[in-house]
Image 1: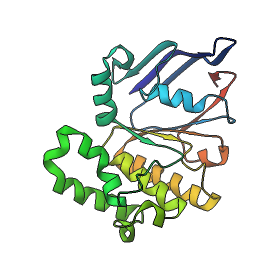
Image 2 (image 1 turned 90 degrees about the vertical axis):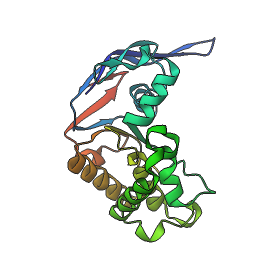
Image 3 (image 1 turned 60 degrees about the vertical axis):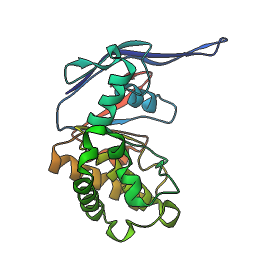
Image 4 (image 1 turned 45 degrees about the horizontal axis):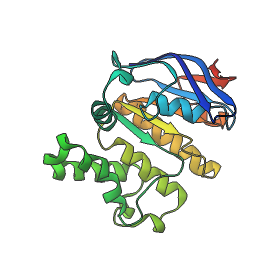
Length: 223
């Protein structure tokens, strides 16, 4: 489903060159749950952003369902991100002026192909929120939620467009161990029930025991 070929990422501030990724190769089959671990600053988030079409590689290719995403125009790449890919980030990125339900529905409202079925999407969102243990929080605002509840809402938002691929960037980084384990269990449940491909990056190797395959990002390459 997803393949990275010889991915390099170089940052240059004019005075020095920082080689973050040094030839990453990765193949992920449809429906797999893959974890990428490594210490802070190893380049995990950089790699995830490149795999998800958020940041261009300095060199290399990212093939999503037989299509090199970095040969596409900006509009087409944005369409693929919105339609095929879901994202869950460490800092939730929930909009404070909207309720939980409204936050979850935001990506669907951006997706023109789904605008005509808003009532169906609302029911889907309510069902996902109930599954995530947030049935009593749908009309609450982010400021009224705990950290774990915010992250569960962010997971549901990442799923609302029915993506075939979900990227999770340190989704438990701001949570205690119990809440973090609950988030991973929720992601794994969704992965198994929907055969959704999941790529998780984390610095906490203890959270990767449910993954089908675990890679370590070390010295700019995956091992």
